[in-house]
Image (cartoon, rainbow, N blue to C red; front, side, top):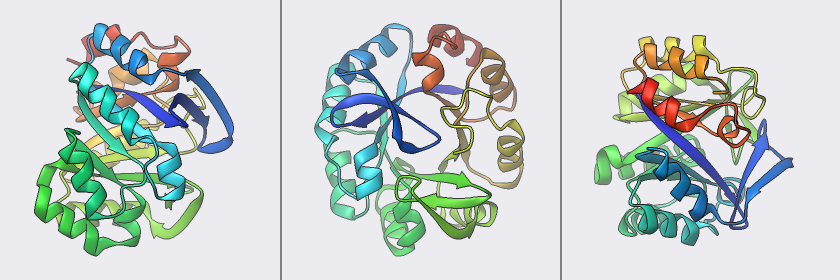
Length: 237
């Protein structure tokens, strides 16, 4: 299982939200590139980046920071937030970003999703954010009318290779990840499943690795010291 340490970006800083609430934001660093360098020094090979302003507003004001992280570290970088048309997909990939994540666009514009998949294949991932069993969009600020499981199964039928699934109720709450959810998705959906949201202990990491998931995203638990990144990478190998 690949461990993806995460950097959420807001106004060029590394931050974390609690349960997707923009009014409950902690700033961890004014220099995200330095944080990425620490990840690399601790053994990370992949990094998960989210432009929070982009996710909420449909633009990408933090793209420059994302590109600097890629260039300075050489890590495998996946990025989501505000990627809602082909021009932005091409810009990200053209700047060397390894994989882009479509969230809101995958829900609201399936034609665009299909075009992106046809053009770029497994360099396109879909992020599905779950609130009360439904798919949330626009930086978690809106709840759609789509139940999450049929949506995920539809993504598999469309040819999505990688699904990044976040249980919003667990994100940043430090109360454990939703292991049952990820085991169910693994069994029902033929895709690479990345667990996100609430990975808050080494026990979580070990349990997800034992499921043979593709990946797990570690955010707040790293910043608070609840998870040692180097150890998490070692037990997931």
